[in-house]
Every structure is written in C-alpha cells, then in structure tokens.
Amino acid sequence: MKLRSFLVPAIVGLFVAICVVDWAVGTTLIARGPRETLAMPRDLPLVRVTLDQEKGPELDGWVADRKGSCGAIALLHGRGANRLAMVQRAKLLFDAGYSVVLFDLSGHGESGGSVQGFGYAEGQDTARILAYARQRFAGQKLGALGSSLGAASLVFAAPQTLADTYVLEQLYGTLRETTAWRMPFNVLRGLQADVLLAQMPLRLGFSADDVRPVDRIGKIGKPLILLAGSRDPFIDRGQVTALHNAVPEAPLVWFQGAGHVDLLRSDPARYRDAVLPFLSKNLCRSEAADHV
Image (cartoon, rainbow, N blue to C red):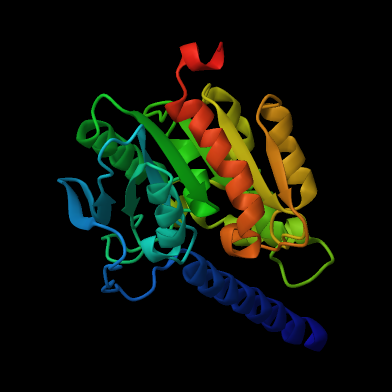
C-alpha cells in the first residue's frame, strides 16, 4: 500500500512533467521570433509592397521589376528566416534577366502572424503572393522558388494557385519523418515525433497527417526541379527519393556534402548550373526556339 501511495503520485508527476515539456517544445517549434525591421538591399532596384487581407495577416515584401524580362520569379524563404535569405538568389535571377518577388511568410520577418505552420498554413500566404505576382507581371510567365518551409508552402498552395515552373529546395517528404529526424534520442524517434505532434490539431487546426508534401507534389502538374543536400540531418535520402518517385520526370540535383544549409552559398557553381538553364527552358524559351 505504501509503495502504491508513492508510485501513483510519482507516475502522475512524471506524466505532467512530460506534458509540460512537450507543450513547451511545441511552443518553440511554432512560435515566431520578434517582428523584425529589414533593411532594403541597395544593389537591387527594389520597391516595398504590403499585401493586406481582411481575415489574414499582412505580408510584407520587395519587388524588383526587370525591364524586358522574360518572366518573374517569387522567392520564399525557410523556417525562422525572412526574405533577406533570398536576396542572393534574387540578385542571381535579376542579373539573369528575371523580375523578382520576395516576401516574408506569415510569422516571419516583417509580416504579420504569430505562428509558423510547417509550410501547410503558409500555403495560403503563398497563394496570395503568387496571385499578386501574376497580376503585377501580367502576360509574363511566373516561376516560384522556395527553400525548406518555402518549398513546402509552394506545394500546399498548389493546385489552387499555380506558377509555371518550380524550384523546390530541401523539401521534406512528410512532417512526421522530418520531425523524427530532429528528435534528441535515437531510440523510438517515430514515437517521440508522434507525442510531440499530437498537440497540432489543438494549436494549429490541422494534424501531421495533413502535412505530407509527398502526397501533393505529384498534383502540381508543372515543370519542377528538386535540390537536396546529401548530408541533410533533417531530410534523409529516403524522403527525397519518395518525392522524386512522385514526380519522376523532375530533375533531382544533389549537393554533395551539404547539410540543411543555403545551397547557393554551399556550391554557387552547381546551383547556377542547375537552376538557370532549368528556368530559361521553362520560362523564357519559346516552342519555336526548342525546335530550331
């Protein structure tokens, strides 16, 4: 009896402690950082744009209009970053002849919103950004480039709002898998992820079962290219392979030795050689030119 009277409170206390820690970790995963004020780069002809929506957070961004452009490209950053992370890509693309559109997703940078939604919730932001780019650059083809969270948001924005071509960097296959790879203990990583993600419906209004880019990427139906780091600690080769199997016609470019890092900075030459010809083929080259 004495043992039971000791064990029951101990077990209850342990359970409560686990729940508190789990909730705190969940808060860290979805909470935005402090709202930032971003300095506009001086070496691009950028103008500031804000997209307002009655029932959604405002989105802040920059646009650079390249005269005589053969297309415009929307660039979307990764989790915990902001549009400054896309500036070097924007310069590369602007110099290659494209207009560029850079926005902070909700819960990031200067944009509104209080949470980060793993790309699933941000799909609504991305649909608004792509619709804006379509309107601003009417008559031109539209490309979309996203890294990590930004890549996932592009997948979840489609097919409601489509670009003409996609560059998807470091896209994860499923939220459960990529979360499991982030777990601190090697044993029962899947179970650890399930326990952590169980709070999502209460806090975000959707579950981990909804956040599966691998089930959505094949429905885009537009040319796309996948870029991945060969040593990404969060997105294993199996996830990348599953994504590629869903769109086997899409080129897959590995960055050897790269982790979950900025792939342009990791290997600028490989990045340029992969991305620029792909965009030129799908945004600029006419059918007549292809048959010459």
